[in-house]
Length: 116
Image 1 (cartoon, rainbow, N blue to C red):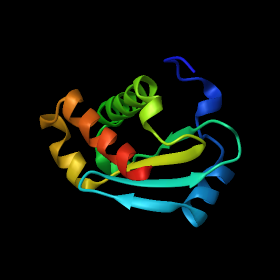
Image 2: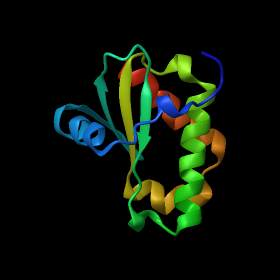
Image 3: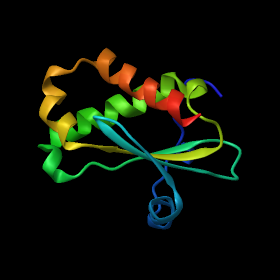
Image 4: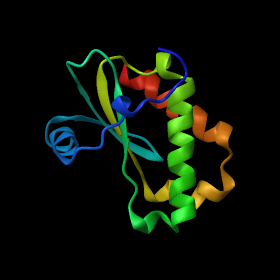
């Protein structure tokens, strides 16, 4: 697969989110909780869930764009045939304005290494 992020690579159905939250494994670090579960689709999918407490809409949307872009450019570093949900923690909300794209990229790539 190239460096595109197709619609079929997104988790958007409630039943898929519910299945991940009930059956998935969790990886926690300072900035994210990542819920993941092996799927039978032949490709990975991601979902992003950000609570309103994270901040205003522009801040939440910026983080979603960052996560999608990092995933899109580095698909090969994430585990294959997995459903993955990213949940930012309160510490990221507090420090988000001071973090650069590269720092968030390093955080997510560290997570990808730990999921394999």
